[in-house]
Length: 212
Image 1 (tube, rainbow, N blue to C red):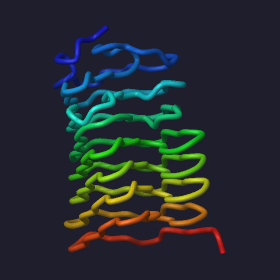
Image 2 (spheres, rainbow, N blue to C red; image 1 turned 60 degrees about the vertical axis):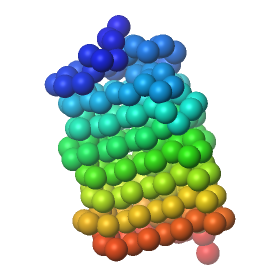
Image 3 (cartoon, helix red, strand yellow; image 1 turned 135 degrees about the horizontal axis):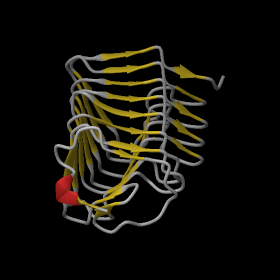
């Protein structure tokens, strides 16, 4: 077991090939952050968890996850590789790739009132059986996409990259790229009721909706 406050600054940590189970406020194949807690990682690898999310933020909005590099890859869960409430920040050098869910959210599944900020790195090649190939959000969440890329994600139904909840707000700027994602409906983003979309930079291209 690795205490939460020991995660920050790790280089090359590999936690892999574990079967899903709950690890309360510890790392044991996955990272569980208690409600109101925080965690940051540099160079860590959370990999190949089967049946449990790699990072669990709890059910309230007080938790914080900041990725300053590191890799979350090859995880398979009904909840997405990262699940829960709070504030998630993905910075340069971070990779959330090749995760999958038979239901919603291949990579990140957010609860109501959460904030996701992507300043760099990549969220690529994740797969959801239904909605939100990379990201599935609930109501009244806020998304800041300032850099990095979300690319090559696939959803079986809606939102190849992102399926947001109602009353959610998007800001796209800088050199962020939302490209080459695929779904039956809404290749990049499948908007829901009362969403707001603000784009002052970035690139949205090559996304495909297969439904005719």
